Length: 361
Image 1: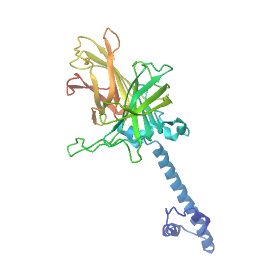
Image 2: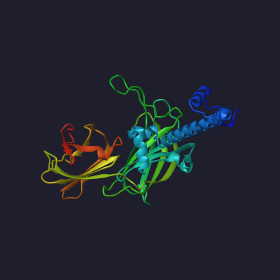
Image 3: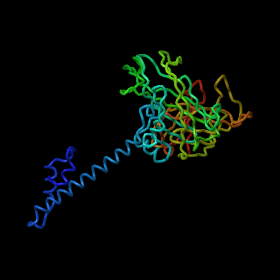
């Protein structure tokens, strides 16, 4: 057996007859050396195939390295190409690619928690964590008794807004209604928790900041609202946020018809949007409704309408004079800011169908 062919033992990528056909298609001019040249060509052909396969496998492995976990994909819809693009732009990090990932895993009372992915811009950060070694009984839902997240050195700081939940799968009936019980663990028993962070001050930024996360005590309850610790422990993490973002800043200056608000500008990233309004006239407010037009979606340049794509956010007035306001929203999918042609807002919190489209010049 020649040396070139030995490389293919056990791989079974290329059969003899396919290599022979390829060799027969090659022209060998010096017939007196056909045998030796054929063996040389055969070895070169095998080597070329090996290189092609290794390059292909390398490209796949590189791409697969950026594929997000099920928890992150559930929270933020993105194609594999979009996930790769986010990584290339420095806005996304898969911690399993980092050789130091194992050093980030924290084990307490037999349960190991470690970060999986981080996706962030200046206004929003999503961080996913894997929880291994914590078992649930049928019908139980996991939770943490307490989660502390802050920037800087003060654990009591309110510099960050945080929301989060455990990922799960659940069957649906023919009408799309959930049936059965949620399944939080995957086949290996792993749980995933995904948190969304934003600055409590909308003028602040997350870029380049270090966040501190502490999970305290695990719970297992049959009611989602309950929090009964069943396993004591603390899991602490220091995580550096990306220093880069990709943002499209647009000057608009168009009034939202039927309201006292003018959409002055917008900042759109693949993860979020922040709209700046000026206010002129009387604003109707009731309860939690501040009267500020809320973001609902986009119309893309190809005519595609992305409606009700919000996965959290905040709004408010910049000062007591109430002459300027903002509305920030986290998206439930990755978008290309350059493809946005129109911003859709609702004029009333109570009526999401009362909408207005604001074209972008």
